[in-house]
Length: 121
Image 1 (spheres, rainbow, N blue to C red):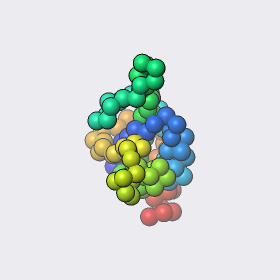
Image 2: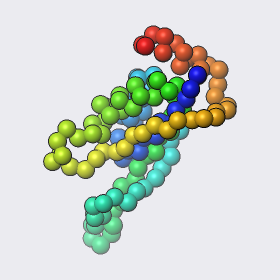
Image 3: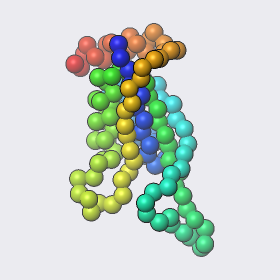
Image 4: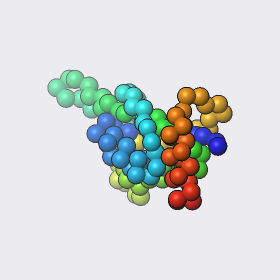
């Protein structure tokens, strides 16, 4: 079985929607990290204070075929890819990376991946 790491970087207020979409698409556990980024647009200021919205970084180890399914579910749920370029800034980014070596994944998680693949693919 081959695995991928799915990384979703979304505004903190969209974190739960991203997790729900991923779990509905077959993801198991999620590791959540806090972060902040620097974009191409200028930062918002309010009474001289600079506002930098916090972001959530979600990490998921998934079976390779399942990772694309989960990626598409996150894109659809959060409309990460705007249909019209005039809609404004991106709501986040989601990507997958191949994993060459993996240790520590639970047998129950492997069984869940196998069941999902058999049922949906």
